[in-house]
Length: 216
Image (cartoon, rainbow, N blue to C red):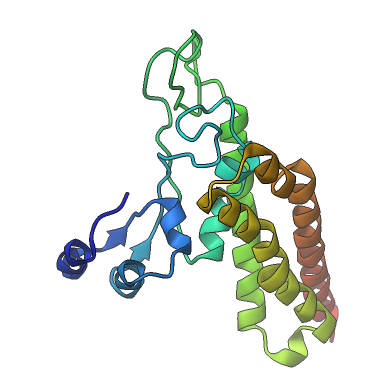
């Protein structure tokens, strides 16, 4: 969750996987420079839930899009390859009245019962996989294999639309703005618009691949 620079420098030679707070992924600090330059993997973890108001573990009064739905795209945006949460299913019985509800699945009689939070995480991971595939496609393709307009569409969603959706909301939380500002920036409509653009890019790339395979 944090620490001081000398501590991170001392740990760096021993690290295979760094798992800082997810909000730290966006930081441009000497500490995060150490994290990014050392270790084989960069994951992330959320036990702070800064998008809830009041700030803290008030998970039923939070911006679901920002803290759960956008977690995987946020990690992708900042070079992370893993996300984690406190917690999957630990804590008091969430079916009753409790002060701090952390679990993202509920205990059932025969199997776990999903939640909106868990479904949001799943959809975010799907987005990560699509974004990763799109980036890999434009990185791997030689220019003539991918039409310029398709490459431009993919580049726009990666370099413009993704930051435009995530960065303002992160900045609002960083400076402590209220719930209205957060909800205006990250909501179902903004996420839907981004996903539609992303899937349009995926369709364009897939159509190009089909055309290439059909060519003599």
